[in-house]
Length: 260
Image: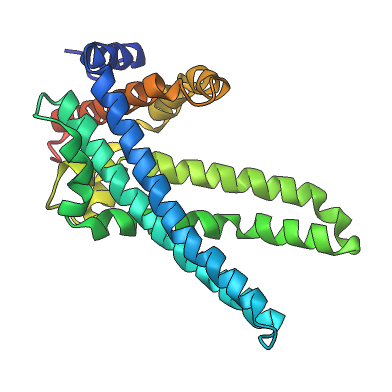
């Protein structure tokens, strides 16, 4: 038995599993994204109302309105991010059950809410905080470049900082990207325990995952050109392929050191 499944094999296995299951898979994808969009809208409406009320109150200084709006935007952004992560866990569980021959259905979309949702929300907020931290040099350089005439020299460093933030964000994903699947699979796994598992699983496999994602670049571009309709096919295909990649990582590590 081959130690690592080739990318072509992973994708072929995903296509075979989706045969006859594309309709329900696309439906799960659409429902998950629609619910996340509705949550975002429900949280944004109070923000818009608060801003309008603040503008209408002539006695309130403009600075106070601006500060309140910024704080509200921050709180609502964190809430939407956390809720999206919990729904994402349900979608992962749906495709995990499909790929592992377990009973699956639309009820899986609520998996994250039924199984310690703070783990998924916390993980997403950690990723958000790290992504923001690595972007601080770029944000600072861009702000100075835009506001200060003397900061023209920052044009080059700004591009360098942007590339650096992209590289660091990619590395974070390559090391810790399996954490969501670990949590979606194991109801008892703790957050930092799951992060540690992801790091160990990805030892010697980061280049392989990067190449796997690059192999979907053309399909993703075509899906955007189709105004998103193509994602009804591309989305389930990618989810199943990545889950088979995760299962193959576990099989490989069991053969090597039995860490699971």
